[in-house]
Length: 188
Image (cartoon, rainbow, N blue to C red):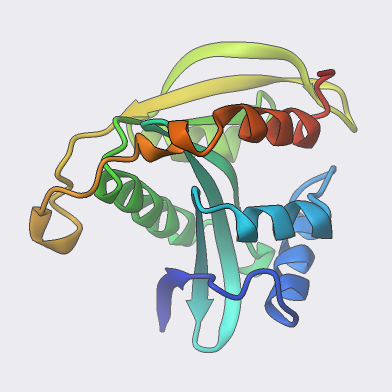
């Protein structure tokens, strides 16, 4: 049986090692241990794991950026792909965003990643732009996609309105931008 829950121990082994394993099989330029530790420590982060019994089968990392949730990474273990688990995990991410009072969810995806583009389109994400040379190994443009969110979210907590996520502004959005820029190899 699969279930989704917060990864509260993301910065600790063995969970961190399992996340890194899924990351490395999913992306040509995987996040580093330090980047996952930053995500684990960030109060604005939404770190969700998709579990099959006691084994992590996928994860999502997102950041609340002053009313917009930035989905930074979503990955499913290869043997569990194309079975609907990415959709299940994405719905949970969107529900958490609505709980926080976020108005939208934004992400970047490689323009060649057709399965991911289709997944996000099925979940009402719309293309809003592109970022040239956003990815490395190979160098490739990113497609920027956004989904507007309604609050309250009927899928979460009986549709009860959630706390507003504007507190991210008070926590220093510039620091997150620097981390995101470093993560995506942008010059600062």
